[in-house]
Image (tube, rainbow, N blue to C red):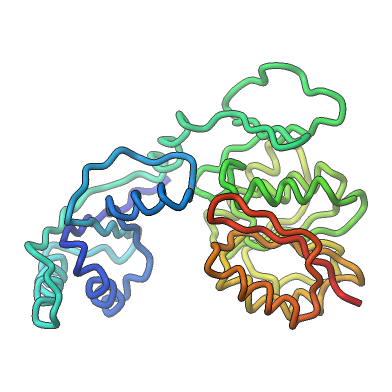
Length: 307
């Protein structure tokens, strides 16, 4: 695993929007934000089941990671000055500080494991790969061994859990299932263990690698490739997309076109603000809503192709 350069940019929260514009000009499109106000909002809305302890602060930190094209000291200083100059555009960044560090991929992949425990959803038991089973599986129980690493999908997030519930309500034996944005591969693996013929894709090569490792860990064989819905060929009976609303929405007409007659589309990862938009666009695309589930601020849907 490789080392990554970490740049921690500390500035006033009120200047975050201006800072995002500066980072975009530098070609830095992917970053994380540490902000006590975001944690408080997530708690209030029920976005998740674990929240780190943080002291209230008027400052926030933007964390940028580089494996290639790292920023040297001169470039870091130029970036700091540009962020500091946001005051010229009506922002108050306060004193801007950039702290450089190094992070190993292995640290990211291992640190969270102390918080991950076996999860049971219906007849599916999601078992951390590094822990032994407490007892032998019961009749009809499906055990999925998982080591998500740096990919999304442990079964603990509401969006994933609701997809797992929907999968267990479908008859998947012998059916073709496509998992779009497979992440750790958890949904694809469950579908395969429920008898489906599975194909999975993800745009993130880290996710593809993690999903393949988890597939092999569960002694399964099905293709997992880097790509999107457009890269798959055929007419599946079920399509899964546990992604985000602004990616799901434009997929809906294509999903209706690709699905086999009376096929099913499971969509999740939608926050409440997008609920009406997803329902309206699905209806317009010709997808009939069979079930809708909500946990906290997250919504999941089971649609069927309307023929």
